[in-house]
Image 1 (cartoon, one colour):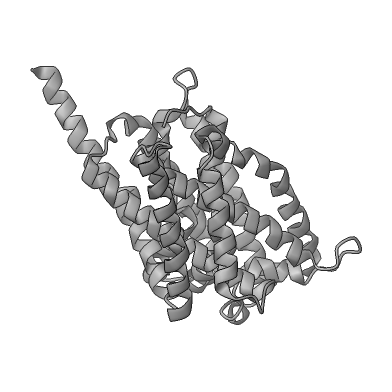
Image 2 (tube, helix red, strand yellow):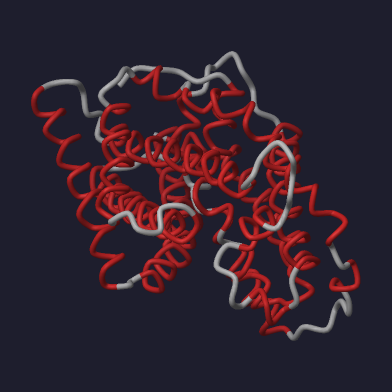
Amino acid sequence: MKFSLSKNQFFIFLFIVQTGSISIAFQTPIIEAAQQDAWIVFIVALIIQFILLVLYERYYKHFILNRFLKWLYSIYIMLILVIFVANIEKSLSVWVFLNTPPYVMVAIIVATSLYANMSRPESVVNLGVLLIPLFPLIFFFLFLATPDLIWTNLFPMGNISTGEWIKGLKEANLAFVGTEMYLIYRGYVLNTEKIYMKTIGKYILFIGTCYLITVLFTIMFFSLAEIAIVPEPIVYILKSQEVQFIERLDLFFIIIWMTWSVVTVIYLVFTVLLLFNMKRTKKGIRSVVGIHLLLFIIPLVIIWKDLFKIGYDILMYGYFVFAFIIPFFVIIVNAWRSKDAQKT
């Protein structure tokens, strides 16, 4: 596949993949782990994320994957995909399509991705730009809940143990699944556009602020006991708001969130195709169809067998392996080989 990204396209792509379907689900686990200090723990996780991206940017040229590692990353991304699709359907069945069979919604998501990934790479990459005008609406409606917030829910602070800190940081990783896409797509950014530490800092500040607002609103809107029983707290907050021009604000939000999530699915499938440079040949088309067939079947198995907890663990530990361990191993090995080549 031949295409290139501007710096802005690159960060929009990364933002959409990182937020995706996880943006309404990560608040509960981190708050259950770190209680009122969840927002402080999340700020520390953001700092770690910033350091990680700075290191990525400095050494991305040494991130060269062999065929085996491409297969590993493809399998990992496919696992993310099937878990995401299953969670999308689960959320839709709770808030919108209560009586719709799961296979109908999964089929719609998969068919949309199949159609998009049959298009030119440039068309797929530019999908994210269409979502940007929708994003401010989410926070505009969320801030309508400000009068209902209980600020004292943030206190007391600093009372969690070391074990709760560690568990909270682990749970915070869920918000950053997709970070590894930085290394996969960084080489496609135009050579004329430089990415500096300040650029990464702005990106982390933006995504961090968006995430942090949802965490703070969740803590201040619910008691700790209530958080444990609310599936997607942000959706519930929006559902509780009454506005004259929209009867059910949560449905409006779900439509935006579903669109955002479907584009995330399209981007992740595109990444699998990119890793193996699948072209629009008969063999390539068969591979695309085969990937989407798996993307239809496996989420239904997850839903019917209720394997969401296993899927959650895969995301947590998979992120640690594919965003930290493998990249640093690959970068160190390739940097060492590069130095040896220069000496000879």
